[in-house]
Length: 104
View 1 (cartoon, one colour):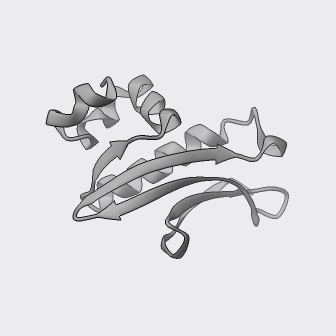
View 2 (tube, one colour):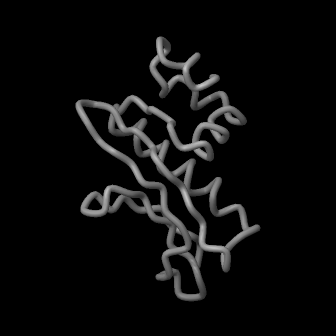
View 3 (cartoon, helix red, strand yellow):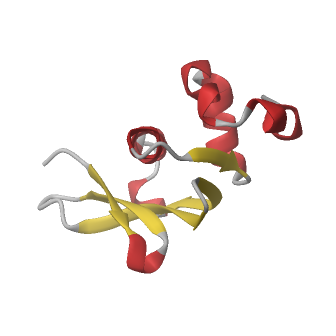
């Protein structure tokens, strides 16, 4: 099965599901949601799933969902911030007045 990114609001995180049957949580991106903003705090991929590009899929899925929901993104998490830096088409999600603070 293809990995799937899903929002788990009860845990305040996006999860990427992978594995043979597509039900194992391979990683997550924790967030704090407040007044039209989503602050990404921490991203982690289980070492058993490392090297498969799942971190990038997770970042893309979470950021695409934030865009669809009209949320402004605050990338406090170094992984999400770095991913946005490598994919400038996502920089517009970060409020322009705060981009310098995140090095974007």
